[in-house]
Length: 468
Ligand code: 5AD
Ligand code: SF4
Image (cartoon, rainbow, N blue to C red; front, side, top):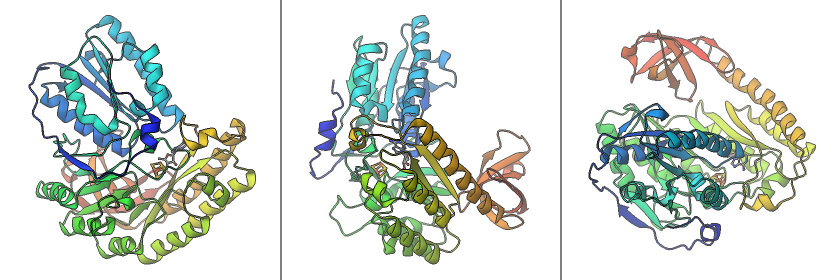
């Protein structure tokens, strides 16, 4: 039993990372049993779930879509905002209910909530029916805990880890697009963010390992790779070697994957070298997610974001200038403690300046243990709601404008799958990451096709294929 501990997370030592080979084979001791997996939150969690699926398969289990059919339930949770937390607890209620009917049901919690000290205390006291809790830094312990399962709640969460797992046999969801972790954790400590606590210190994979995984994906005919990290431009800082994210990106691009992407970039330390690499390679997609969070220098400072509005704008301009046709999206938080109407207006000014292709907008949510949770929050919830509403109107205006620019144009779309709403349609993404619904049959799935855009609205774009 190892409980999450925020002091451990904060007082992380800078020791050299250890690479752990976790290509372990397990006996199929759960042969014939069924597991149900529910994933909340970001791409990192989605990719972690591909790891969980591999473990479950190795233990002999098959995946079911219905909770009621499961012998093992795994909730891969998110802690980024209060509503993510509420959703998980809502679902746990259903699991608890099911366990009354099926006493042998095993309930496991993984993901970022497992790393929250207060949440785990609550689960220990009030949710004793939860059997297993595993942290993000030692997800590889999940099969071990399932094998050792006893009647006692077993919690294994490492808030501070120097381990980089290697040789993970992912059970990938897609045969077309793949996620590849390049690093784990985050050391930025933006004051509102729980991630540095739940995912630990920044640890980079070695370039050779990343390249080997990517090469294997290219050999298996994958069309797209997305390099994943909480903050990809910090890649390599901890390795003390002579390469950085720009070098890694360039080397992956050279492997010849048709489409290469990366998330997420911090505006601080986004180097000219990185911009040049993105601009140089046709297979690095002209799309950058560049979270601004706020347009006010006062708030950016309180958030510990390490850049000013002016520095962000200069970076933004440089990207637009050097990378042809680049699309830029962002994340914005409204109602951070101390945000005045004037500060909020500066955020609106920033959106008007950048005219983002898209933006994810959030109301500030206090996360226990973070630095901002100790700041006086003097913005009322009505003000926060109202600011979000006003912000969304401006944001939506620009995403619609950006979509409208595609009307009657021919764009390249990587077709991902069948449309859920319409059997005669498929969907895919432009190089700039815009979702397009296409009138076409299944045989184009997995291909990059030329599509003429016939309709463009705020949230949807339609098109027809001009060539196969
Ligand atoms: N409250 C609201 N939004 C948050 N985000 C991260 N932490 C919080 C929080 N405490 C947002 C940021 C980040 C995105 C992933 O989630 O905008 O970029
Ligand atoms: Fe959180 Fe900031 Fe790290 Fe992003 S960069 S994960 S917002 S601490």
